[in-house]
Image: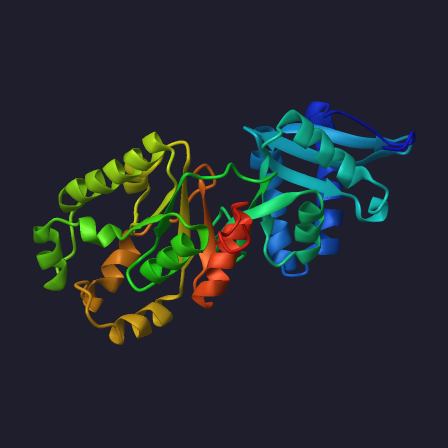
Length: 321
């Protein structure tokens, strides 16, 4: 950081009008996907909701404040630099400060803002997930990022609705890593298999013994410190809660409904009735930023998906040694 730029804690409500002006300048310069009405709507919430919820750090020059960041619970909720001061190092200085305070820093960035994404990737962040809307439900997809490489997992749970390609990807992933593989559907009690084959959705009570068997398999791998890959739809957060543990990472294979339906229509030899697709989609709860996991687009070849998973988890395939 140069001698003409320094950081200091925010000085409360007296500075908020300047921070709002910086926010608007930055957004108008970089968020071309937002309409003026969108910008006005978000700006109206800054003072009432967003700024009071974060710990603010400002970047200042002798001429005044040129940028600011907002931290809350280990997450970088905001980082904005006045459009006229971009390129002078304020953004990097604010980000380095946040990373020093929280070495495992997380943040969200708009998918339609490639410049911001490039900035964070340049500083060592990694994309660990995606949400199709922002936190207010607006149609602005968010990419979830984390600083540094994730801890190397012992067990990978390949999850998603029926037809997303779990078995194919998980088996190929286990082969590439030379890890043990377990097909989670093989652990279903016979009553569950019969129910799904008849087109009946499973209840939480039905899933409990099945999740228990999957959990037992995961626990055995963790205790033996023997890595493994297992499939499990893991549709709800509460289901994943039965399986989550240090050393376990969830990999969600995401695919649009039409593509899944097409796959199910041509699939043979599986007990899952295609009529249950909507039930599964309605039940599904996406991974959240506090869960150990990542989202991968499943509309690619399995080899591409496997390569992406290995890269994003910092693993090394058996073929590469």
